Length: 430
Image (cartoon, rainbow, N blue to C red; front, side, top):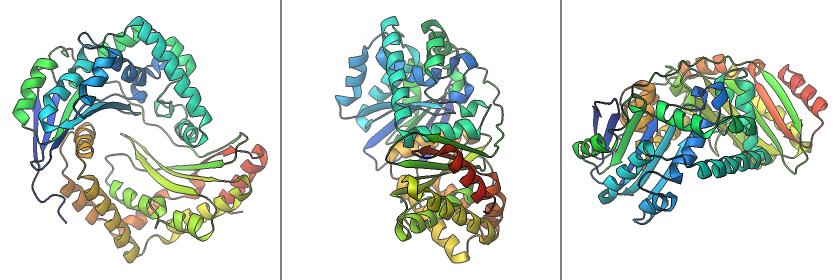
């Protein structure tokens, strides 16, 4: 199955200052998506700068040498485009989507954010308060907060366990000078990747970026990333609410692991969609939860398989029993040939559908360059998924879907000690 009726043209150029420029030409697209990736996330921040990458994501939109905050917001919106950014535990991305005729405007604005941000003292104070409000709001949203806790306890003692937002304490430690120094020192040539997907001419993009990103000259020394060690845990937090939230985690493969394709298919079978085992058993057959799904999060050197469900406190025990039982069944019996083919087709179909989205293609360019230092076409990934066999998927399930190595978090109107004892009993086969 081919992803495109045409063959996208991929090109790469490394500028003299180390900035990598990647383009993927889609001749039938009327839109373009440009992104500047900084190969740096929350796990790469110093101990006294936790939350800095996310703080900088906010600050660059407050003003540059040539544009104030309103002019930055207006720049792409005025032509029907979109300008945004996101921060993860391993990277930061600033991106713009526009019609192809406005690509150079997108590149100019993005380069301005990366080269000329001012970090005005008043904006710094206001935005720090905005982020503190964001932290407090997240803590009130239990279905969101539980994921932060999952990373904290799954990767205890490692930088991957940090909150992307930071904490009120760490934000108060980050002075304006320290934040500006971090931006000037770390957001530099060798650490930056510019990706453009859509109707684009590579050499024209390179010519623009040679001028607009010329200030990013200094060499960058990437910090050493310490590999985390996952240890099973149980955490129960009593917070009166209508919903009780459950999140289970266990260690899985890293971004480059040869078994990552088995991990994608295993996640689809477990809780990746409406035909997954968890959704069918927990929601459709038993009505124990409105929301239940699994989520795969690979990292540079590790990975987490997560299972989330929201239910009422009185149904929590039945929900836990069914969830543990489905994990055990996958661990012991694996998938049949017909099940493998079903979920393999599902994952491949979803991948190809997503590839029609130009922003998805831009993100894929950046991800592959950061992780693999190479280009991986959609057809290459499809071929890798096709190679998954019954033997390989079941070997993966036997190795990773082990309830004795689970982490579990519950937030809701529950008795902490009784709930913790119940989970421990279930995980021991009680």
